Image (cartoon, rainbow, N blue to C red):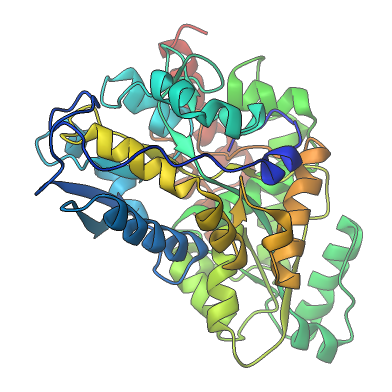
Length: 437
């Protein structure tokens, strides 16, 4: 996830970790070895759908884990993104905490929990098991958090095993029927939106009730941004003017796009699943969202040809993927570490890549599908051009909900762009004051 702009090509080509010896482990929570693993259970939570690239790869990892740990069972519990987003702090501070879970990377999520003492320090394990060698420095950014909960330095509190980025999915059949070419510049992109709108088609599928619309808003800000602005906003390395050209352009453009019919006013109440189902159903020519949808597109789109391309600009939201974290109250930390190892194995990484994901340690020659190769190559291109810009909700705890509310108001027209900018500036600046910046 976070990447302050180094290429991950080397990470993608890196040799996989050798799987740490499995089997006999102690039943204490310190991760020590010795004793019998017989009869133990590893409780694991994640929120990826079963047919996504991550869901597919991790299901195989669970099978491999059980095969390598006789007598140990994996108890997998699928959780919703919003469910974990809103309740993680409470659950991890209780006796209901799982042994290992997928969690959002960033200051407002993993950083906050690490600061609260709810996550296990994985620094020693990262060194011992070679995670620090397997993951490039840029991919390690979201794994590490300092004492303030700010990512990029400090101790390891999570481990990513895939990459991700926001891009443009498009319906090739709808483009061909409308006589519209795939855009390569932002001007061409807006011209395509206008051409669809004039034909009576709302071009962009988005979701104001969850993350997609705020990521579109951020993409527009990034088209006016540079790396210094991104680092100021995300890493608190400088002052952010919410009425500066970046956010002003984003807010005004979202408002204008609704008026022009590029975005439906009804999208203010849509959730990510609504957006995805609508695009998969052929109702929109364009969906701007993340690579985490890619595997699902491959499996579920049957009635039209589709493709993807990079957002026309230098930057896009992206980083390592979400991270595996081990709750401080995990009763089977040693087993959790073993499971993380398995997700880093070349076989699992190759499966992830061939299922439509962006692996961090696959054998490039083992990725056989042309679309999947393009997905990974585009990620590498974005990374190489210093284009991964993290995500807009990361800087402050609770900022995700602040952005959802603000972007919904832009879409439904209940507030003017400058009012929304005031609304999203206040919690950000309050957090800056809280952490002493």
